[in-house]
Image 1: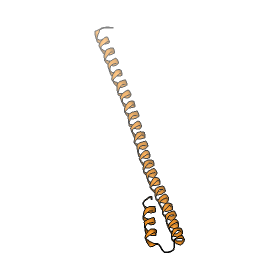
Image 2 (image 1 turned 180 degrees about the horizontal axis):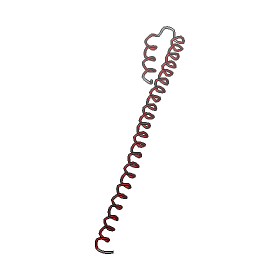
Image 3 (image 1 turned 135 degrees about the vertical axis):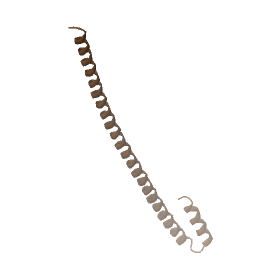
Image 4 (image 1 turned 90 degrees about the horizontal axis):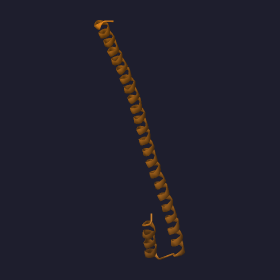
Length: 101
């Protein structure tokens, strides 16, 4: 095999290395894009869960506040029924109980 044969063999080897590099690059780019897509899906899902949880917390807080207001109103009614005539004490009690809500 002469110089020309060795040159052709080296050139073929170089082309094969170039093709292999292109295949590997394409493979890793595809894997990278797939990983990014999955990450974006998970981030979106996490944001949805976070938003749903915050909404749930607000609803629970509102329900608890409504229950407290109902208890305060019931307590005020009982107090008014017990002390039939002291309007100032009743209004003071209402302000005091509502401040705890």
